[in-house]
Length: 230
Image 1: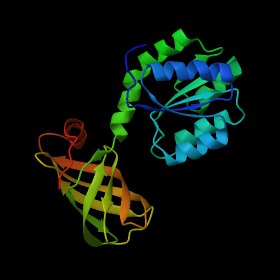
Image 2: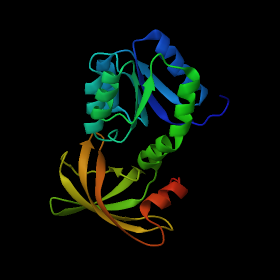
Image 3: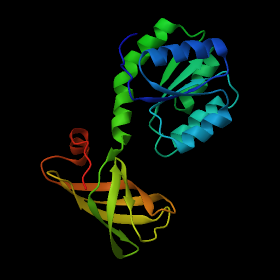
Image 4: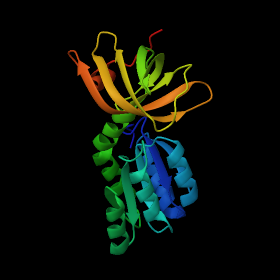
């Protein structure tokens, strides 16, 4: 397990079974994943609501495990995270799949089997990371909010949204229209939704619709241009 196949991937591990947890942590760390490990559903829910994760490994023997899977699937940035459910019987397996788990890990957890499963799942995990990876990117953007146009600067961007800095007030959950041009890339116009605002003038916008003119679409440009402009 010398290869860092899961390098830079964020995994949340949820288990209160020490023997299973020890094997899971060994497999994930051996493949280079970044881990957050918690032993309660409450802590896991709070973490998933505030942080972006690429994958979730959850012990279905914990009370509330099915609810956590449903919560992640219904959430915002983590709704497409890859979910591994550790199951001890067919009932838990069925519940996990119905709630939205992608893959099943049979208990007692075997190190070799889990490593093989994680390796096979690496492309799926990497695709999730690419979709939400935040590129540091500072470019001018025009944002139309409640019929008024505002000029702002982006601070970071992913395939699914962007954060901007603005002196104007924006309301959470309100619709916006925007346009910007990427250096040596496409001109982008679109519609989005304000997902969050903070007291420092930062605004998070989720992309709802995008129209790109140029040689490359936004996703391809971001994947090949991790830069910061000033």
